[in-house]
Image (cartoon, rainbow, N blue to C red; front, side):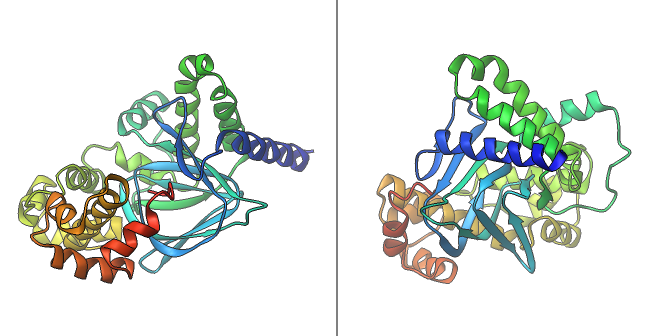
Length: 301
């Protein structure tokens, strides 16, 4: 009986996503915190950057790679990112069975409010968690996602019921097997939350000169402790993380806004087009112009 109910829930999830995620790539919903994702064709492993989010997949599969870790998100596992994170991603799907998913933004304020209301730290993980994890998709999470998608079919339901449905999904993720990263995000003085605060600053001030010593001080850590904890969360050094974010932002400016490499380089904090061209080739395997052409109009940025 339980297997039949689970199969029915997953079938309904695919049905709703097929009706709502009609545009290739990311598309907005009636709620600012929710996006639909669709891919009609497979994509090889490539660099991407995700904002903090919970990604629930109805159909198809994605495989994320961060350092030596591999994360699968598909109809059996959902993805949780508690910090903004560059990583590599591979998409597996077919035109007949496209990749269909919904992405729910993770808001630290909502996480903190839920933890206060839950008043339960029994499942809190003392070890510092990573910024990304994949977790088995439970019946409870499937049901919460179906309710969210059903309400998103109506603008009025979205406005009245949508925020409650989003909170339920965050709540389910908090109680998931890998909910420790979300709990640590809202724990003010944890090492994880201190690194997360620095990551948010890097994402908003990536075009400025950022001194790593000052960032370590902002996190309340020595330089060595800052580098150690930063790598534990992101699998990257602070300088490499900043470089990756700048390159992803430059790619977006070229693909979406039509900037050339020189203009994009200046906008994201590089001093020259030659410098950004070298870094583009290392990260993306293409020149800036070729990479912008590849992504322009794809809807994947």
